[in-house]
Length: 407
Ligand code: MN
Ligand code: MN
Image (tube, rainbow, N blue to C red):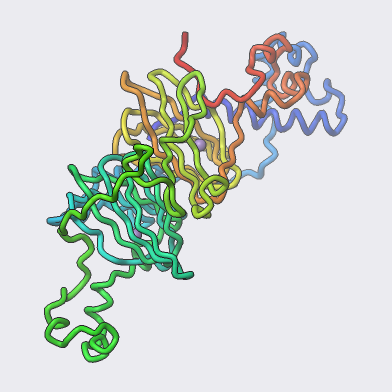
């Protein structure tokens, strides 16, 4: 953890400014409020700031907010499941207490390997394929079954309780990130077919499955989770040359979407407006050029969960009441930012940075600092910050999203 001095300074100023605003709203003469017109006009900013800091604070003495929780977890650096068919590393509230609304798994399947038939009782599953190819099967309660193939940049979404299986298609390993819309999902919520069979009376299971007692006796004695399997034949390509059948109800090819392009990078976002099945997870891929800055912003409606695919960045969060925290992130690491917390992403290093960003919500929402300040009168900002009209005019007049490298 590092102290974000800029944010801390900002906070100190802000406390004083709340008083300024109250004073102005209360029609208290400026001189009574201890302000000079010269300082408001930017004549003596240091004096202005000092005057504000010396005023008594509104908040009662002794009131203390708890420090901000850790918001970084090294997912791919953790130990997890490792078997003949692949590996799985998991993060839930057990490992990462701040992440109450999101759990995740970084999974690798070898060609043919199967993540066995299962469902999640308390969470929907959203996934992004980082590399390789995966096939899924899923059944919905209306009887609709789907079989889809996924390649790099594709996402899937399985609603809570819909049973599914995953299989590596090769060539090479498939690596994908599974995101669940509940931080507790693992401990209470994964139901596997082998686990159920192993814990059901054999005579009863024989009647329900059509299998003989002899066959049942040879079944796995507990949950298989990930097991080697045969590589299935590929689905036949369509005439349009797309090697993978087009988007389905559970599938969205995120990287095929036109990105929003900004001076410092680009982003592709998909939510339930374009991917109706995905009612509880918004997903995006952000590419940051070296030296760029994803500007100060927050999300009014959702927590934010990030997974660093490549490159590095420094993330700063602001949790009100003078609390801020900064961490550095690299490949395989996860950040969690609480709903409404201010934050930024500062690209670092010579390599571009690619981040998978998800939100447990139906729709994407954000408020950016530049947009907020552009949508206020100059005079209000001048008096709020104690700066001149000329200085306010230097600020952007629209949303910046991602600033380019400093020129
Ligand atoms: Mn699953
Ligand atoms: Mn954000």
